[in-house]
Each structure stands twice: as structure tokens, then as C-alpha cells.
Image 1: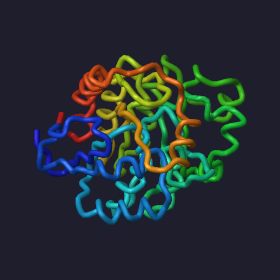
Image 2 (image 1 turned 135 degrees about the vertical axis):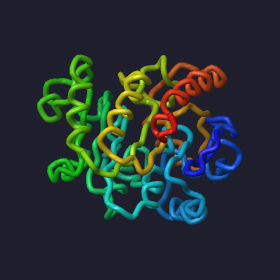
Image 3 (image 1 turned 90 degrees about the vertical axis):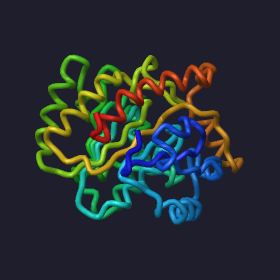
Length: 284
């Protein structure tokens, strides 16, 4: 179905070209290797200049290796808003590279209209010491960044600092948090690596949400807030890089994963797309 306020920005062929309709398709595959995983600021700004005129409030794009581009999609909004992220990773690392899928929230927090960020579903090692020492603790102390992880995945130290939630109480906690956002404008970003492997084929470690969990959460948010935009990324695609430093850093950071059959991966992700995209865009 054609959606005028949505855009499929194709960086890596992760999704079928006609998924949102031909008029919503933007081919940026020539940029894919240059901005995958990380990119110099000048490269990101050049990509922005070429892509900004074609943006829409809702964006479908490729692998989670491109999640830092959400920091660009957010630039199109000129009224105060809150960012809700469903992600297995906090993406809050303060070390370079500064335009990277693991550091992009720091770029987003520089935007004057972005008032607060809440990340739901962290389930990887980055909230345990020593990794969390490199996160944006200042934004947490200021109340601009809230991390809501799965308690099942963390040790006592992380659970003390980030109480998080469990499978038994997460919906209750989320409903309460959503009610606290009453009347706000929201942007929602979904990285499919927040989902269990049966619901998503990704390039990263994966979390504990089901697709149905996130669909429910989007419904709850729409009951209390206005979702002015959003995006979805995280679908598996073969990694291609343009710079040896980029390739080396990405190889060190990515988990070792079993071979993913591209066609099987695409079918899993398409099923989840059909479940989540209508809820995200309000076209359910």
C-alpha cells in the first residue's frame, strides 16, 4: 500500500524495492558501503544533503548497521518531541567513531527539539561494567536518557543502576510509562535486534521482545501520544564496506553469527514488517 508520508531508503537491499510502493522508494545503495556501521562526519553530512529533500516522517531502511542514520531522520522535525527506541543495544557509547550505530544517540541528543530519549529492551552486555563506563552517563543523570533493560540479561551491578523490567512485569511498566507521556509528540525507532530470533533475522545480538510485544507497545503509545514519525531498521543484509578501517572496526564489534540464508532471513523479517509497520505508521 502506498503511504505518502513514508519512505523506503534502500541502502543494502534488505527489503524488497516495491515494499512501500514505487513512489516511496529511494535508491541509496551507492551510499550503503560508505555509511554502513560508521562514517566520518563529512561523509554523513554529504549523504544528508543528498537525501534530506526526499525524507518523510516514517522511514524503512536496512540493517541495524545503519541505525545511526536515525540521527539524520530526526532532523526533519521542528517541534519538541520525545524519542522512544526499541533496541537490544543502548547506542550511547561516547567513544569515536561519533557517527556509528553504537554511538548515534549522542548525535540525536544534540538536536534542540529532542527533549528526552527512552530505550526499551536492552539485553546485551553494554550495561555491565566495564562497558557502561563509556556510555553517556551525563545524559542519564540529567534525565534526558532513560534505559529500560531486561533484568534477566544483567548482573547485580547493572540491575542496581538500571532496574529495568522482567517478562512478568514489563507490560505493566510500559503502560505506566506511556501514560506519563500523555499529550507528547513522539518519534519511535525500532531496531529489529530487540526481537527474539524467531521474529527477526539480524546482524547483531538479539533481545527478548516478540513482534507481538512491540505491536502491543505501539498501540499503547498511540492511546496517549501523537506519533509524528518513526523508523524501522535491523533486517539482515550482507556486509559491504568502502574503507578498511570501517571494515576492521565492524568486524571487531559484530558478534559471530551462524550463516543466515538471505531468502529465509527476508521472509522472517517480512512477516514482522507486516505486523509492526502498520502499527508504527498508524495504518493498522
